[in-house]
Length: 119
Image 1 (cartoon, rainbow, N blue to C red):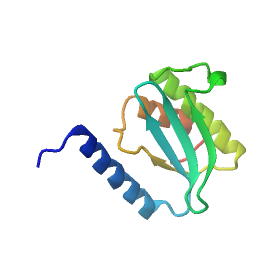
Image 2 (tube, rainbow, N blue to C red):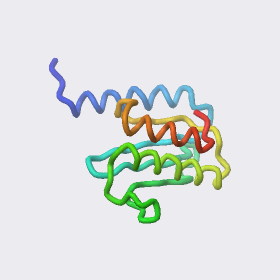
Image 3 (tube, rainbow, N blue to C red):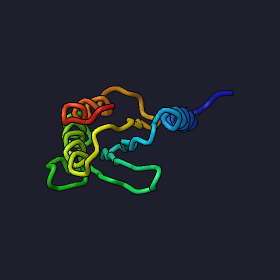
């Protein structure tokens, strides 16, 4: 039963998502996606099926267009925290997807916490 990297990623993503569904208590989900060139994050209200706020390295006003490093992730985390405050959200559940919680994902989470989000 040798699994390749993609299958392991998908299993991790489903495991994380199922745990979040059980413990979310109606809080919005802070969903992170990381590609080889960019990193993006969305604040999603699953009960209504709408995105409350979003931030990405593709936005020119963040000044990190096309970068995918720890500093860019920290700027995206700070931006999503600011936008979540404007949307009136403080408590969220962090959905790291199938990504491991270190490096860029950890930097984004730490910046979001410093910006005032609680998870």
